[in-house]
Length: 146
Image (cartoon, one colour):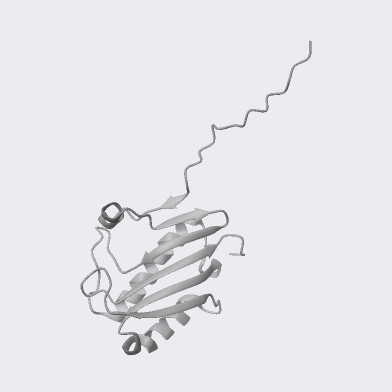
């Protein structure tokens, strides 16, 4: 008696997307995730200077918001076991771009060190929270060396 091998695909593996959330109200209110992995890329929603409850920290204080935004970005990186060196692209949304250009350049160099991702800086009239001055979205390539 010969048996035929079972060629039915194994569907028992979890096929849900690898997502990350900070657990703040805006995620459910707006219906989005902070980050989602697609293959070797992680697409990260705009990060900002928010606290544990989702409140904006440091309203109208650009340097403090930029520093806190970078700390928020680091939480996303840590979730995926990634480093700043694996960020391949970032988009910066800045209220009063010209006023904050110098602080943005310094903050970017401090955050990335010798690494140079592709970047676009956009001047905008306002962001989601009153007093919010900066938001940064980015893409991580998990294939790059950490």
